Amino acid sequence: MRRLMWPSVFKSVVKRGNSVVCFSYLPPYCPHLNIVEVLWRKLKYQWLQVQDYLETQTLFYRVRQALAAVGTLLQIHFAPFQHG
Image (cartoon, rainbow, N blue to C red; front, side, top):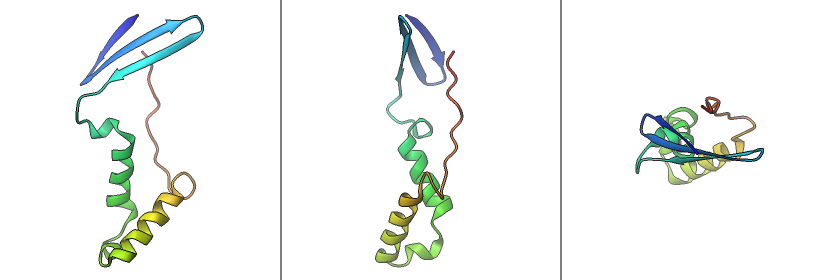
């Protein structure tokens, strides 16, 4: 077993035969490492507009519309995973 130290992330890499399993131990709050946090930040600050917040029904509609478009019309580009 090999251990790597990254800023605020303790990682273990276990190799068995041809398989490699990586375990990451995240701190209690690390929004930059949580995919859901990244999605909501993009939704809130880039994909929704100010007028979408004026009425509840409009907000619900635009959120559903944006989430349905993730992966097709709307993209999130993550940095490639660097295995050390």
